Picture 1 (cartoon, rainbow, N blue to C red):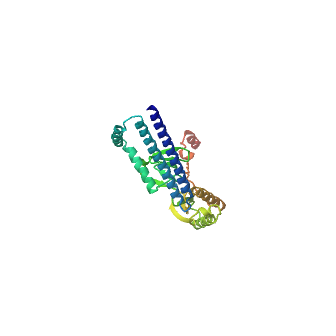
Picture 2: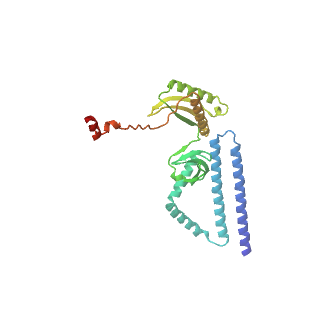
Picture 3: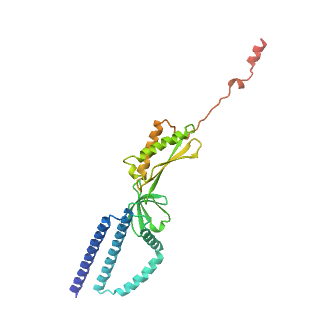
Length: 287
């Protein structure tokens, strides 16, 4: 009898391992098939890859749980009360774990609506970073400092996806009031035109840069703007290069970019105005 139980348990373990291997095989095939779909957009491909990974996790959990129950049944443990208790415990846990359920529902909505996928740069509240991992419970963000932020999906109310569809670069520059504004706009227009023809950065633009101004009249400067629509994910490199070229053009054309400063004037009192009429003056008048 004991030998039969050992054989049965060994068979269950072997079938469980085989099931996990089969699942892993089909998941790998599915991932390769998704990556091989050339007609899919990158965002859709990332969404399908994330969905397959989450499905793999769920199937693994189901196989291991079923195998555990079968092992208990093999060794004579009546699993009917256990299943009933598990149902009651599941109900109690669900009532006490409303936050977890909210996170799972939020993760399902993120995946089904394709709000963002692994590799996107998003902003959630005050946290901005690249999505490194996405599960039904949480989103893992890596910021520029290297910090990994774990954001529960149920806590996400407003998310800004900075790499979806297209992006926009805004470069605001301040020029002195003494400058000829038409000349400044002409210089910026030439910089924008040359930038659009650049073989390195031009392909990342979706439209010709636009020069706008004046946007505002500040206390010490007139603000002008260069605006350009870019491919998603390339806006940061394009903005850095565009700012560098605008600054070089201003230096080359001797266009002054003012900065806030304060001037303090100190006026002293004239000594003769406060000099007293002492006794020496009286003596000189009497002689």
